[in-house]
Image (cartoon, rainbow, N blue to C red; front, side, top):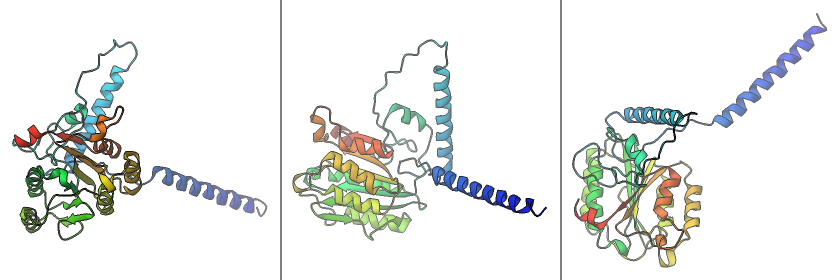
Length: 296
């Protein structure tokens, strides 16, 4: 008995150590579960319901793909659908603000049919106020005010404009709850021409560093040239790398190319910066043409 006891204790101790090690490795690999965020502005009446419907539709689509890829099935001709479609406001029949619904492709548009809003509660808006926006800022502010007015008091938000070395944030700085009083104050602030004036160039890198510091779930960027101009110009690859580095909260970034195409798209083999940002962060991209702006 005395001879067996030390051996038994040793076995139990080592077994316990192995179990602890396995648990630590499993915990490290599994990591914290990341909430799936629908990157649109308007909050659904029951935010978890759209998410559940989205997951169910995703499962149905995956099941369809497995069925189509099963052996002895005739080849299926892929659907010829456009790579980008403009999303519409599914909550109201009126024209949507681009911040409310911007959808990247036909599959994602299908997922959102019948859904009234998303589940993001922490939102940020980053607006280019450089000289190229002089003739369009009026429309930008109209859409922005419409979107802010439709936010729920369960949400928090901030708005940042950038031009030259200036970062102009709707006061007070930081995320603010979208209650009625705050929204009214922000609408008045946006309506005062002295607060948001366009001109000069813009420093997009400094602007996105500020906004991502707040760790929003969804960030909306509106610009026509997000790699900047003149002394603020930054290489596209560096911009994408910087965003990946500083986006520690894994913010979904939805982007709006406003009226003018990205100048980089004129270079063979190059894609627009805003489109690539949205693609890499799980957001949506939308090009809003002048015709769409003027006939909203």
